[in-house]
Image (cartoon, rainbow, N blue to C red; front, side, top):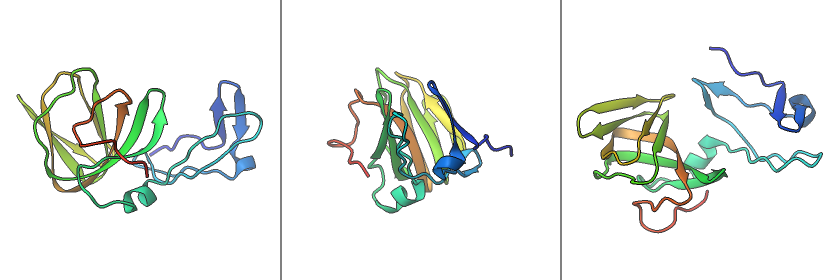
Length: 158
């Protein structure tokens, strides 16, 4: 697999060589595996790098997403899933599921789709679905901040 170039970070204000900041981002099967906090000088915004393995190690509960960062008007969330979740839909937003570890089944009214580690699936708004994992799976999602999640209360940050 060809890894993306890691010699420069590109911003709208220009490029900064990574070697000057001792940053590397390993990729396996297209997924970022190790990230860490980094603040760049020169007036650039803070860049929050996250170690997914460390974050997943901080919680054990299934179907209780944890917020790890924000992107535009969305939260980046991690979840461990196991078993079946109820049928539901999101009327105003699409839902992306990126499987980091394991595999999950997305049940739709007309079909079932397996999503393997390193793959993602977008469930369009208004579509009924029920996620299932026969073994524990680790999933990353992007969720608009305006989403009223089906879990109780606000998802904690990790």
